[in-house]
Amino acid sequence: MKQRIAVLGAGPMGLAVAYQLVRDGHQPVVFEADDRVGGMTAAFDFGGLSIERYYHFHCISDHAFLQVLDELGLADRMRWVETRMGYWYQGRLQAWGNPLALLRFRGLGLLAKIRYGLHAFMATRRTDWRPLDHVEATGWIKRWVGAQAYEVLWRRLFDYKFYDYAHNLSAAWIWSRIRRIGRSRYNLFREKLGYLEGGSETLLQAMRSEIERHGGEIRLKSPVTKVVIEAGKACGVRVAGQIVACDKVISTVPLPYVPHLMPDLPADVLARFRAVSNIAVVCVIVKLRQALTGNFWLNVNDPDMDIPGLVEYSNLRPLGHHVVYVPFYMPGEHPLFAEPDQVFLDKVRRYLKTINPALTDADFIDLHASRYRHAQPICEPGYLERLPPVALPVESLWVADTSYYYPEDRGISESIAFGRDLARQAVR
Image (tube, rainbow, N blue to C red; front, side, top):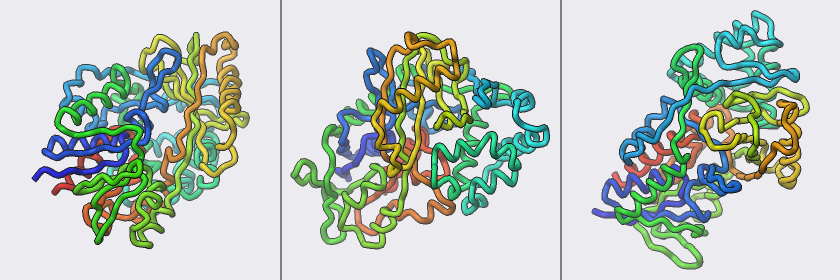
């Protein structure tokens, strides 16, 4: 029987839910507060260049993403590129990301290099994350790599992303990040990453068209203010003061919004949602006249730079200009998040000119800052078991966001896989 299902959020997970629902013969109605689909993958006009607000890349192991491309006839628009990593340390740009670069790295002793390499190798080969679920990440890394390698290669990555939360993170979550990058290699010395021609917008618009072509709806600038629950069952949503009736509700918006949207949930469930913490991000995008480096990813360990790294995106996807993403992560309650955009733009100018002294003010064509309050869930040890179940103790109501595919990091492919499975659960 055809069901009318409200889907909250038109990010990759919400679109994947709606996409699967229409394929299974149902009628999703997607409600999105923004004026465009995509969430963190949405594009904007950057001085005549359509580009995502926040960077994304693809690995050869992103099977769910590649499957949807094939279904939509977009597989031939996928491009794979050999990329490089670098490390900015002690005022020097060094190669990074392969065994030879590790051996040549200036700033580590031989034993520290061996221990670091062994840890990366073993993490890439591990398949079962559960033994790491209740292990604290920094202690786990220190036991493997030692104090020197942790201080040089890891500490600032933790401190400048998680601040006060840095010493209560799950080792399983960190492991999944190491493994994903490790599996993007097609041999020990060469890394291959992918991009879609036209960026994520190519996929987003194709999914939107497919949803609408099969009778689904996508309503932009339509924030849901409440999920209507009557007699223990979700039966509609309130939008612009009006009730939209539906058979079921699936929410994919960030979990911190759930208590406001669903105040009628049981008190113990609301408490679990309120306990979820997230890292915010201010992401500065820069358009340059010349390249910053030859690397796609650049890790940063510099006492004068409060960033864990940056992404020179145009070294993956040709854009006609040199484009760099510089993310500043911090807890949303941190005073730094309240600083005006200009503070971050000025920092980025200074940082990039330090990394590449050949850059002048004239090389900076444009800069733009985007903000996202709930960019990254803070995954403590045993994170998943603290979350409420996806199928809530209310009939016809499901709730999830990127937190639920822990220990995997947030990503388009993971969101698609989880969203499609969520849609199947909801109508099963």
